[in-house]
Amino acid sequence: MSDPMSVGLGRIANDPNATPMTRRALGILATPDLIVTNRGVTIDSHGKIALRLASGGGLLETDDGLSIEPKNGLDSEVNSSSQGDAPQYNINATGTAPNFFQSTVFVGAGNIVARSAAVEALGFAVEAAKVAIQNNGTQLRLHWDDRAFNSLRVLPGGGVEHWSVGTDTGFHFISGDGTGAQDPNLGNTSGVMINYGSMITQVFKIKTSIAFAGGGAAGFLSWQEFLTSIALYTARNDRDHVTIVPLGGAVIPSEWLNWNSYINAAGQLVLRLTWIGVAAADTRDWAFVVTKFRNTDS
Image (cartoon, rainbow, N blue to C red; front, top):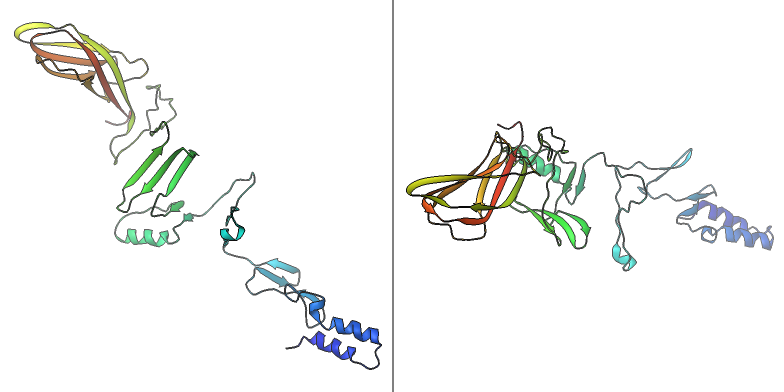
């Protein structure tokens, strides 16, 4: 269909009373592509230059001018191969202002809400997560650099794997602020709970060398206690637990019947050694392992 303005200008250009220059000028005006692109910018039916707005393109024309059409969210797609090796991002947030997400953030898990509802229908309570990540491989990795990082992976059966990678690997759990009145090393009101068990605030090992002088009498039971002070830690005989094992792999004397450990009222670790008959002198390393429990646990 011909543009009305083009038709009108064409008639004037063909008017025999018009001068050659007028007809030439009007002939040029009768071809809108010579004035505008006729794509983003065109000439409307009233002969006015106007913008062409694609349906659903995001711009609206109102009496007050152009406005942005309200959208429910941001939908972007970037083909990284179109720019060679240059990095491309669907969203590249830069600047000093913080990024704030008021609602739930889904990463690779657009239907996680429906799945949570399905689990709840089976009788299991599932709390809404602020951030939901779904992937068949590693779901989360935190980096110090390329050679030191921690990875978290949920397995198909529901098991969880933590991977600590680096030159000095391990997991360090810290809870509380260390201001507990009765325990200057760790707060007494927080810790680690395993399967809703008792709250553990600290586990530590003390290695010490204990010299046993030997002795005893033939046919009689004897016992001796050895005290170990732990200046850097505190142990409490009303709630903490201690075990002890000999180190080094040296052969246990045949006269030894058993050994055990406990925490005395002064917070010292005690080794009690029991033997029968006459035992020879013995010096070896021992390891006390102390498990400390929260104050409020019985």
